[in-house]
Length: 179
Image (cartoon, rainbow, N blue to C red; front, side):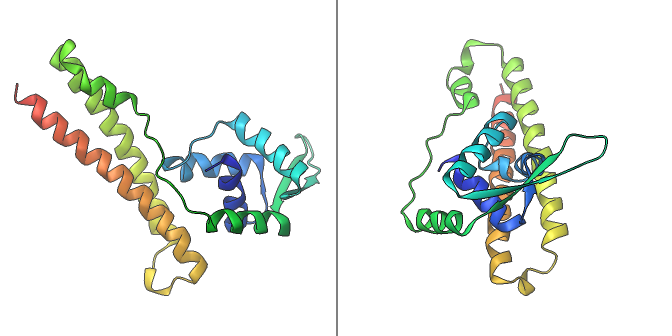
């Protein structure tokens, strides 16, 4: 998946957003399955606009810089739909902690335990944010519209991802604490 698809999907679901709003959305909920820096997002928005997949409207602001509101265009929706219909492949995992775990016997056990506890807390914090989004935005799952169901499924995947990390960290901590 390209960052372009993540931005197009976000604009489709959330409606017109500023670059700042998109960055915030990524940080709060999308980061569990797609990471992007602020610079990458703003660069990609400019590229999407050049391709005609998004349009922007400049909003004048008093006492602050003007802001651009980005919206997905019909051409952008067509491109996104075409991409959705193409088969996906699992993403390659690149996780530093797994390499550290593989060779963790080289360092004192306490150092690995500290790192595992630190990572567990990171995932607990992310999990809490996602659960709060779920609670606020999807209070009655049975009453969700078709569009809302797809958004809900994305949040649920993020929740399960973070919960699995927490469970794995706890398993690893318990195993190493036995030594």
